[in-house]
Each structure stands twice: as structure tokens, then as C-alpha cells.
Image (cartoon, rainbow, N blue to C red):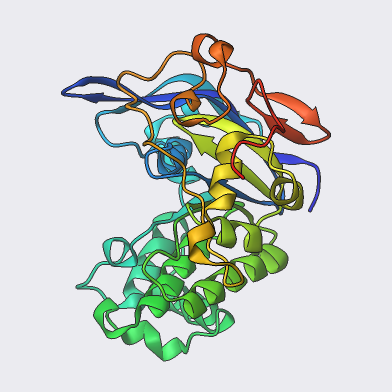
Length: 325
């Protein structure tokens, strides 16, 4: 991994217009991704993780809008690109692996035809050459090239996800956004997918944003982990630092809620309450209604994200104090 920053997100804010009013999905979010780095973005459902991925590629739903911030890829601000320029970017330079492979794959097209279609959308070559590229790619991912002739329903869940990964990397992008790519897969297949992603990083020098709610998976694959809560980045650190000494009460709660075979289930800790309604978010720290160590300041003023230790950032007035025992 190098220190050169490939993707830089600065002060990004995204809102959704709903029947109840404006919902704040991402609020003043900043993050950098280096070449060859894997960053996991973790948090509960509704924290803004998937919206972050959609915003980077500018594929937000019609009621979603980027209202502030910059997203730079190799020095180019993605937010300022035209639709034509975005088509050149998507898939070829930045690609995405979506949660459900069955919604990413056309059930009426052979796997090979879908790969060929993806290649020909960006590259000038004949279909036979594109087919051979797809077949060779599947073999490199340890998938029999004969699967090019199969339809999605003929494949297992794990195989379909690997095909989706093949579609995401066939144009050799620099950045891959993996949005909960192991959802619905059994544990063995989950770790096969993680190993595949790590191998792609090592062999192809791909940088990966791995979006997940599973801290165990995040630890296995990541260099750094970014913790999101209610649209905010609340903690960012190298994975060992974050697991060894979580500084934000929310991160502590997430780690304490991970089941361990060596302990009695009655000792598991859960975070009380629910994530806030982001149409009417709470004043001050977003986490204070659920935080066992919140003080009056937390209810009045929002903490800033600060570097408490080297390369360890946290958004909390009482960072490092034990909240969940």
C-alpha cells in the first residue's frame, strides 16, 4: 500500500427528499482512500453506508441529492462531471459490487453475454475478443470458463457473487466499492469472497471500500475501519487500533455486541434505543440519546472529529472513557 491518496471525499452531505421532509443521509463526511488500501465502512442500518457508495458514483435515487462537498478521484471532482464523463468513469475507473447479485445480473442473459456487454460499453473490440477476456477472467477467479454459457439461475449464491465481482473488475478499475457483498452467504463462502477481494487488491492493486455491518468481516479484510453513525463519521483508525482501544462509545457498543464462543450469551451487550430519525435529528451529538456516558454538553453541542492519537480520529467529548462494559 502506498500513501498516495487516490480517492478523497471532503465535507460530503447527501439528503433525500421524502414525504415527511428532508432526510439527512450523510452529513459533512470526509474520508481518503490510498492506492491499494482497503477501508471498511461500518455501522447499523440507516447510518449512511450504502448512500456513501451511491454518492461516489453519483447513482443516487431520484429523490437523493448531493448538497455539499467534493469527491476527488485522481484530482478530478466527480461531482462536477457531466453524465457522459460519468459513464466513462463508472465501471472503468470506479466500479461497485452490489448487495444482491440477482438484482445485478440479467436473468435472461448468459453470464458471458453480460461480461461482453460490459466490456464493449467501454472498449472497442470485437465480441470474440471480449468473450475471451471474460473467459480468462473467470479462470483467474477460479471459475470454470464454461460458466460463461450459464444463466444466473444455474449458479449458486456464492458463484453468482463471484460473477458480479468479475463484472466489477473486468475493466481494471482503480477503485471498487463493495456494498455488503457477502449478505445472504454462509460463513465459508463469505470468507472465500473476502479472500478473493484481498487477492484482487494484491494482484491488481485495486483500492476497495468495503461496506458492511459486520465488524468481524471488517477486521478480516481491512487496513482501516471507518465507523458511521447517523450520517456522521464518528471514528476512523487502523483496524488493530480500533479493536484494541475503541474511543467512541458507539464503536465500543458495536464491539461489545459481537458474539464470542468463549463467553456466555448472557454477557453480550446491546446498545439501547434506536438510531435517530434523520428527518429530525437530535441536537448536539447524534449518539447522545443512546450513550450511557452522555453529559449535558453532548446534548447541546456537536463534537468535532479530532485526531486523538496518531491516525486515530474520533468525534466525542469523552473519547476513550468506557461506556459499555
